[in-house]
Image (cartoon, rainbow, N blue to C red; front, side, top):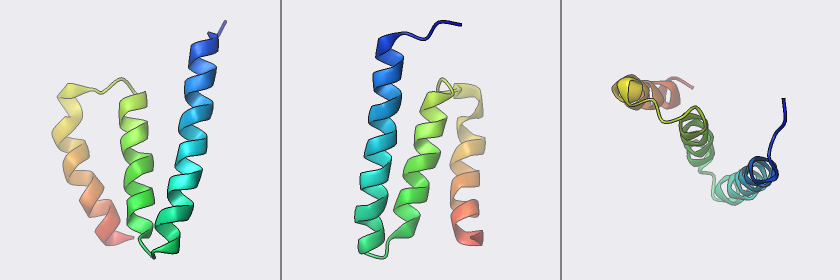
Length: 67
């Protein structure tokens, strides 16, 4: 399976941005922002499944409140 250069660069960019965003949010004691960003990144990375959007919107706050 050949992966294009654009996909590699996008993946590295999202990974680095997530790291920086998590450090910044953690410094303000807002750990939930990092978790939400990772969850949303995964959602869009999975192809934005529109038939599952309500399941994801409901499960994200439940997961954050339960953690």
